[in-house]
Image 1: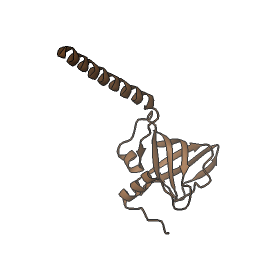
Image 2: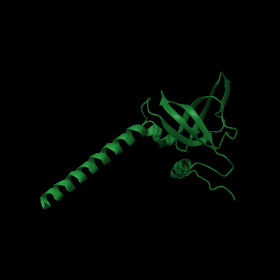
Image 3: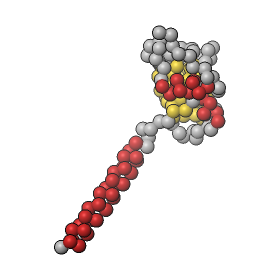
Image 4: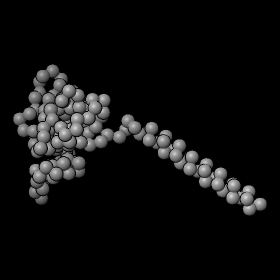
Length: 147
């Protein structure tokens, strides 16, 4: 009788381990396209990602770099103080998008240009995405907003 209970317990534990591994694999498979890693311009220059990889870039819009009116494509550069990456975007930019302001873009890095599919800008004069703040602090160019 004791051997049967022990055998049943081992079977239940083994089944639970298999179910946990299977559910973890399914969740990972379902989320594979939904995870976008953040990279600063300096990181992109140091280790360029594959053209098929979708990720987020963040930093400050470089002063004097916004080019509008060249068809529907808007071109600008984003910097973290250590490196600058050219960006192209087709679409309507957020109202608060401007030079020397924080931004985060989603897209891919193809032939030395970040092709953005989405651009997010800060939503008030003091907000900056945490990833951008961290990247700017690492480069030593971050300035605390005045209260």
